[in-house]
Image (cartoon, rainbow, N blue to C red; front, side, top):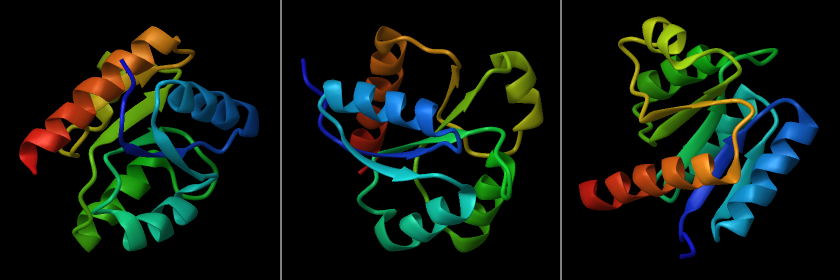
Length: 129
């Protein structure tokens, strides 16, 4: 079953971003892309109400995933965040305690895992609306 939803992918590594975008498009999502935290915040200032979920890389040059989350919270921009990282979920949960994170996705991830995660986050967003 195809997914419908607008997803923002924030990833500084071009090959990883392109791969993630292609998987999301295969699942039926419409995708916005940002190559760094500043670009992501700029997009969300304009489109946060439209974005069903954001896949946010934990570690990026410039603004890190944690700094992006802090800025979104400061500005009152709400979007469900799926934090992506090569680190395991337990260490990320400790590090991001106190931040609103809808889900964690460990890299490298497979289509099935991405599908399950995004489907759950988009469903939660739809229910909350």
